[in-house]
Image (spheres, rainbow, N blue to C red):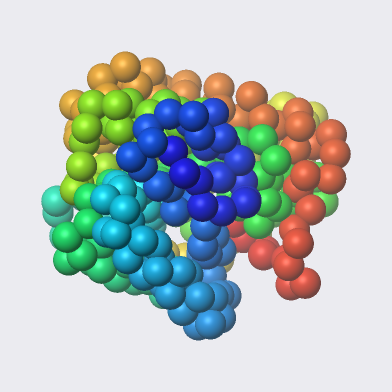
Length: 262
């Protein structure tokens, strides 16, 4: 598989580089869910258009990573489904949905993975878990009232992609998530317990949070069923918290650090 990109997700996909020669992974693009200049969205779109034309010429399958976060599925009381209605709540969600539509209309073989909140080693500091770790260590956490978050281990993302390409799944969208939207307070509680500290909590109003349907995922990749277990999010946190807390991996590279992870 040809991996286009040099960031966190591209690095995680490296074990697949020698497999699936028919596939190209677009492991680049915007990873901030808020405060993104329009120029960043434009740059990602132009790059994807160029890659689409290249995949059409070379007859390759293009893998695109979208989002299964509340930015895409703002449906209170409903589990977001790949074939169901979506009402993106942010520019980030609308941008991803627009790029999905470009792929669907292109005629190029493609696979869209809508990712929940991915957790893994060497993650940028603005993403959900390293941002929460940084805030807990600082002694103050800013939370969206009523927020729930679905965590997925990046190792499981790699397993899912490997299996989908191996079985020839094509021209479809797949939610890659645990299917369990955990209250944000529970995630902070677990981080505090593991770090042996407590942080003052401030609440603000935020976007609607909901569950993500994993029925299609489990049908296509049944061996990933363990991700739906009740304690999955705690196992994911325990796998990476030590590394986040031990070094500078949780530093936020932006000049204006995010105050609440989305």
